[in-house]
Image (cartoon, rainbow over all chains, first blue to last red; front, side, top):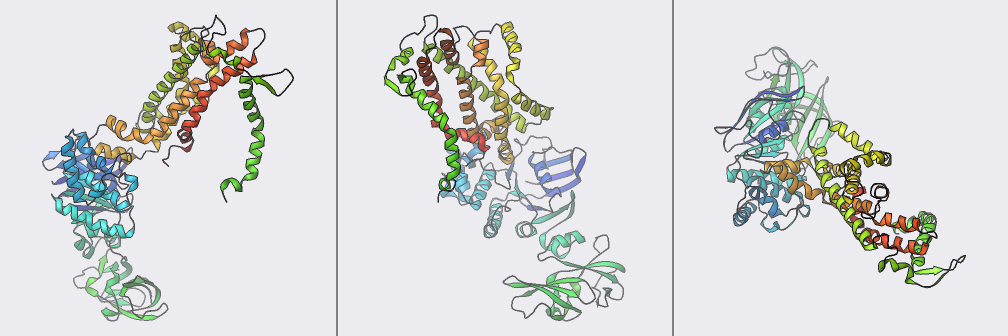
Length: 347
Length: 275
């Protein structure tokens, strides 16, 4: 079901956290609310599920206006960061609780629980209590409980934050699979850009209560609308260098880069170069000294201090014979240079 | 090496300090069943004469020990249930509901808890007299429960504070009303606190002396503590053997409860975190 936030405003006492935010999540879409902590993404989530009252604006599920509807009557499933399973109930009772509240008959609850536990693959754990489950299993139970009422919207609040790295990878694709299989509209709140990029159809990148950019992950990565977006997405992160745009991009250190095609700005700019677009495979152009090499198995992260000042990052396949202290002269993929004005807007 | 072995010197000091107490307890038990000769420490023959209060009235003016025991039991149970029921709801409200004046209420609780309640006894006496509850079991039950409440509310609030908010949010999200969430999801998390509070307020009621003495001095609402008091006061020559035997009888339930519920009682000091 389509979800629409219009002119959403949230104030806590005097402090306005979010002002006039518009957001539409298409039916069956998985949307990420991504941003640093304190950006208002959790506030938005709590407003959608009805735990926080909205200070202004309206919320629509499909054609229904649910702005003032109490949380119990909204059809929203939530998976909390710590899963919030009921410790005194078995897995079966946990998953069945939302139906028990609706006075569904026992046999029907059992059927539904069986269906959901098949979907999240925990059919053999129904008699256990939450304390006897691993983090990933608890996560699956929380998912099943959130989905058993066939809610209009599924909200996921940092669902992978409490899992170890390997489980996180597994649950990432699991959650995506379950969301696709059921075709449910979902919102994922996270501060982890990898999660957002790998799991969601679109990302709403938030900062200080505002949506900075709303786009598909690839689009947002390749074509960020501001310096903040460019800096937030990408791991290892993008490098920024000050430059003066003239004939060429003059770094002010005796070095310069060719102007990327289509750049019209002149004067002071900030250029962003992603690590994969700087390296020996792009020819020559920038001279510097390798100051740090961080092996990551498949690849190596290399920090370079440029001749005359400024640092830039590169990522190369493992096995490249690069040592700290080595002097290098590597090229930049000119077309992929991102240019920003001094105030952070994209040029 | 076990913990006990490592801190043996500490154990030794504690043992030495508590020896006089132990000796007192031992003699309490021994002398209730065996009279020692005057001036001698060693008990004489086995003699159950001191326990005669169990099967006969030791004084025709007083009710039998069984009536007093029943009264004590009723008094302790009623206060325990009253305190627990009210603390359970009040503690939740103070922990979770955003009501006006909450900080002052919390501060007031602490003050009430620390307040020497005996100074209120005249005022309470007048109120009970006015209500017609003076010299009745119901009267002292209400007073005792009221005085125990600050402690109970505070303890229960502490237990509620440890229940994660998300459990309640999840319950609301699952469609349950706030009352249902409290009853079905939150209350089971604070069960250890409930049990401990129930036991502690029962024991406190069981050993209460001043309130029944002052507010229910008649014979109809006599509890064990005032019964003992009467035994020692009435006779011109105090019968210490009898007194000790009644004391034994009085403390047996307490000992049994401690033995049975040690674990639950420790919970209150553990702050309610689940082990």
